[in-house]
Length: 261
Image (cartoon, rainbow, N blue to C red):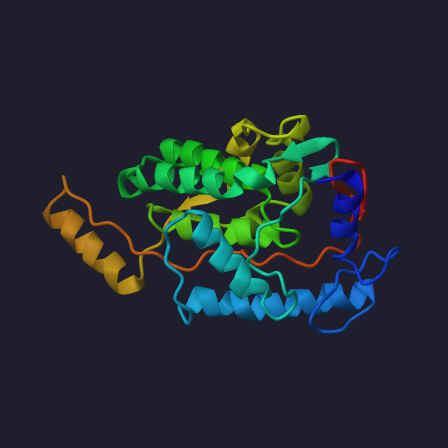
């Protein structure tokens, strides 16, 4: 693929050669209006997923992430659920090569399914959830909507464990700083650094609260059988929805330096 053909592909995402507005199903040509519309429509679709109104197999692989993204942004972009087919660089840091995305994320899924999440101690959970997040983050598989799809994926993963993720316990600035630090320098990423996320997930991971009826049963059970415990049941994640960004710069570029929104 030539540099010129790559530029043409990136430019095709926008409504015009000098615009920062992505082509969209809504026919919107104003960045601010698209930003707000995308947020509102995505929030409704996210609620459908959280209520269980849509069937998305939780395989934690490429197909799982693609299905989440497709449902979240199906009302806004034709390419919802499709992996990018070009390299991308952000702040002089690269992501997984587009040719490797399927393999990379399927490997993440295999590692997730190989871990015993229901019995993890909190420290073990924090370490493993940080590693999984870093690997999905460094993939950056979509043109837009990577953040919300990744957070929803992680929230669903946490439901396999005794812990829940409360995204509202960390500022956007702190989250973005840590997430950016998981990326290696260079145009193509072949590994992720989970360490910057440890402190974040330590802060936002909480023991899952049992529903009132189950909590009472657990209390009675514990009083009768002090050496045994009854596990809690999953509840909805807190603070999962991402607020729309107010001033998102054209900070991403393809690897030849062409700017993206």
